[in-house]
Length: 110
Image 1 (tube, rainbow, N blue to C red):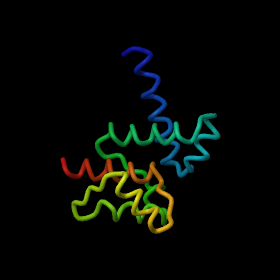
Image 2 (cartoon, helix red, strand yellow):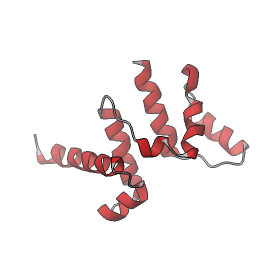
Image 3 (cartoon, rainbow, N blue to C red):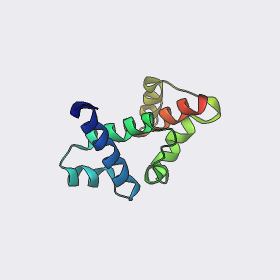
């Protein structure tokens, strides 16, 4: 495996492992001296590439419950529709949480 491919996979796994230790995404970013958006990307890619990926810390938050309900009962909303719905309710959409549950819903369809 080339270094180009191997290094990003190692970063994905390291960020995923730190998340499973209970660290917040902001804490992982600070420790690894990366932007939080980079950590988010790593966690989402790991979720896509791993059959049974699950981030307990993400799913235990109150905010996550709202996103989880978007994808219940076979629903699969588009980002823009969900964002418009959130904004109509005076809420801000969290792309990471939306994408996390979107990926989980996609995997459940398979």
